[in-house]
Amino acid sequence: ATRRLRIYRALDLFLLRLADRVITVSREQQRLLRRRGVEPRRLVLVPNVIDVDAFRAGAGRPDRARSAVGLPRQGPVVAAVGRLAHQKGLDLFLEAAVGIGRQRPDCRFVIAGSGPLRPALERQVDLSGLRDRVHLVGYRSDVARLMLACDVVVLPSRSEGMPLVLLEALAMARPVVAARVGGVPEVLRDGRDGLLIEPGSASQLEAAVVRLLADPAWAARLGSAGELRVRRLHAPDRAARRLAAVYRGVLEERAP
Image (cartoon, rainbow, N blue to C red; front, side, top):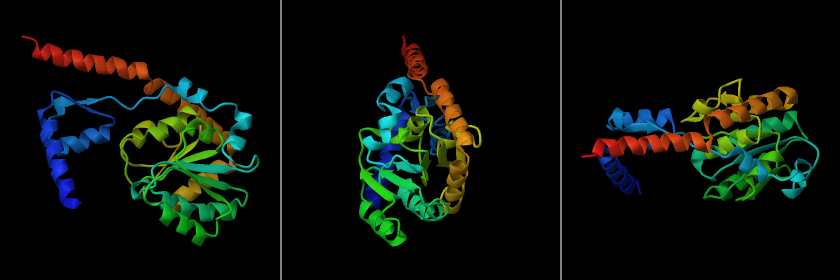
């Protein structure tokens, strides 16, 4: 598997060097490609986008969100959404949940997604003593509704590009705690649109979530600021204009 990965990366880099332009979703991704030998002039930044109003429309009525996803109406809910893989740091979320649960016995924890680590995560839940408060709900097509039902969304990833789930959480005006990896800090400004933690730190994740749950008004302000930011910087029409300009530039360069 490691040999195949090396071959894939070598082919990928060869093809990238042949391209007129390489579109990246974050500045961090651009830095990585520059270090791998891709010319800076070929790199174009076009961040991931989300149609906020269309995504929010899929959430349905706020007063029905919790019952629709099988959560109790009372008590805080903290959620993580993503593939059940080592990269996503969901084991760190469960580790933090133990401490959060000690301080907030009424808190529920949700992990939505599928992947190879589900059996390991289920064992971790059993060992943590949180079986009655942790919900591994599998893949969900109603992510907007799930997020609406939650008080805090966490992204404890060990690595990322520009995660769509972050944009989705902000579109739903959810307060977010996210690890400072990849393009995440380009979207989320610590203390302004959400909270950033160091990757790999379950203790920082625990502390940040507890702070948000202790101050719902502050958490709501962060969520509202995040929604405004994602509307402004990650709108589809903004990206469409940028992509159109990229194609025009390439065609002009190749014109006889």
